[in-house]
Image 1 (cartoon, helix red, strand yellow):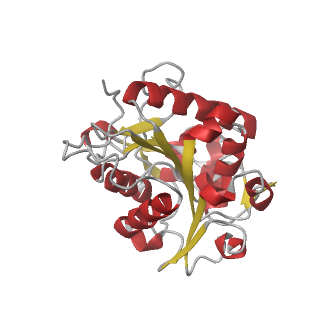
Image 2 (image 1 turned 60 degrees about the vertical axis):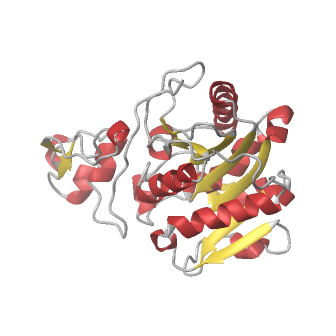
Length: 299
C-alpha cells in the first residue's frame, strides 16, 4: 500500500519545502501532488513521504543537505557546521525524520561554542536498508575525512533518537584505531531496538520496529565514555535502565524532543565530555568567526 493510498487521495506536498541548507533559511517551492490511490504509484522520495504525513508534535522539516564533495564522503547526505580554529569535531546522526529543528539547532549551538559539527541525515541515508557494517564503514570514512580536512584531533559521536539507536552498532564496526580516536559518545533519547531503514509508518508508531537490540550493542562499547540523555516524559527511552552500567545518565525535562531546549542539551553533552576526560579550555577558538550550517566544503 502506498502512502497516497493510505491517505485516500491526493496530498499536497512541496517539492522544495526545505530550501537551501547553505543559506540557513526555510524556503517554499512549487507545490505538487502525490498520486491518488487509483494511480498505484509508490512514493520513492523520502522528503515527499515525510511532507505527506499528518502534523507531528514538531513541524516536519528535513532540511536536507546536498552531498558534500570530498574524498570518500561525496555520496553521503551530510551537512557541515564549521568552527574555524577548533580541533574538536562532533559527528551527529539525526532522527529518522531527517535533519530537523532539534538536530539543526543543537549543531548550531555546539558550533557557537567552538565545536565543528558534521550532521548526518538519517532519512536520506536509511531510505534504503543498510547494515551495521555499512554504517560503520561510512562512519569510518567520515571521521577520517574530517580529521584530515579540518585538522580535528578530538572527536565525539552524537546520535539522536533513530541515530542514537544505530550509533552503538556503527561504533562497534570502526577500526580499533578509530575507536580510540573517539573521546565520547552521547546518545540522545535512544530506544530499545535499532532499525537500519527509515520507515514512515514507524514514525507514527505503526508497523515494524527495529530488530537489533540496543542494550546488547552497548555491551561492545567502552561505557566509561558513553552518555545517555532522555526526557522525563519519554517512555520509550532506554537510558533509565543503564544507570548502573553507563558513565553518565542524564534526565532532562520534557519528552522525546527535550522541549526543544538545545542550549541545555549542549550543556549536558559538554559537561559529560569534560567528565570523560576532555581537557577543558585547551581547544578554544579564541573568538574565531563561526560559519553557519552549510553543505559546502570548507578549506
